[in-house]
Length: 295
Image (tube, rainbow, N blue to C red; front, top):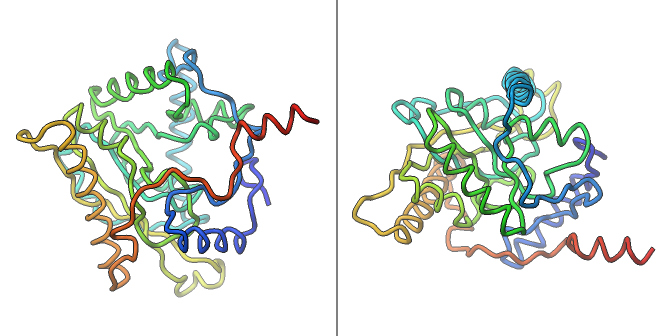
């Protein structure tokens, strides 16, 4: 099966890999190999902030299309429950963090964050070639990179957005996407570093799942998603930058854990888990290149 041009493992195989990763205590690994053929490397020449009249016009059209699609598209493909938007009252610039549990959770987040000009941080392999990649870049993705020069430009672009009127950046600090996973997973620090150095709040988002109900049962077999906008968490003036990063990260994770508990009636098993970069199910881009060279 393909999704947005990328070959996907069957749902059952994805869930099997999630179980294996859980048993190893690794909650942050990719549970399938990305399609490296579609990846466009991000180097120091990558344009994080598109400039010029035509680029700006294209961005406006694509962003408007994404927003128009978000509500009906998410209802059909993931779910349309939105809770807690009142928590955004008075919040201007901010860093959003969300659990990564569906290919379209970025669109669900886009609607939940309505009123903010949102940029979305993605893995480098989501910076794709072709028409789809162009659309995603116009829609406001900020891909990460292993290139030092590119990451300097990434940091500058994030800082710029967080000082623009109602500018915001969405991070998925769990790093990897685990389809339909219910529990919060450990966070990496990048999102909270951005919030701390720019002195803006972190607003946690958390997607929960429920069984289809009523007429939904006629159309949907899998769980339905609902997104919760949790209370903003502000950096503390008396803390150092390093201390604020840890404070924002830990408080955002606690907020997601509390939302999980309120939704499912139990504590998450992941509450004491540690973040890890170890990959279990993928060989990596360099291995892919080596395989291509050997053919």
